[in-house]
Image: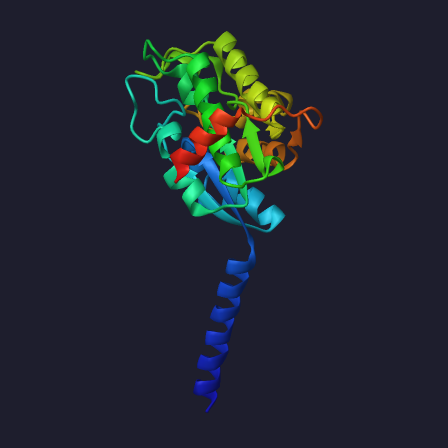
Length: 245
């Protein structure tokens, strides 16, 4: 009898957990290795997991290492522009957090540019809006801080500069402002919180403390343009709807 009761109790706990999971707000975390959790001593300490736990969200982590956002030639595998429909829209999230751009600004492809990054980021946001996600449930971040020496350390991803980093940050902010999304200046927040002490020995990925700073920056993101929000053109929305169907 006691064994049967224990089994029933366990099944009830599992059912309750599943019910709770199904009823929570789903959030997709979209980005590269930093979103995937590289640099954190465990996945439980990566920034997306910290944020989901803090806000009571169901975490859907769609970070993939060594990826870029733009699908500029040479088109890199799993770039954010080409995979956002499959990995974000069709997961039906209520909230989306975007942390991309660091690999874009460092990649050595000749055709890679901040203009292409901004164009593709705009297209991603248009697609999210067209799928029904509220603009205030979209958070866009600046590319996170890295040690300046790391701009030139790694083959293929060795074309970054401090100036390019700031230009990409401004481009990301302009997209957030255009669509009235939330903006997190992770780059500046990491500088303010200690810069190099937040970075792991590879010079690129945040350590546990760095992930905590990213979490705090994303969790406290605010809309950068609450008035006169410039919505995308009818043609742009139509293209976005066609892309996600």
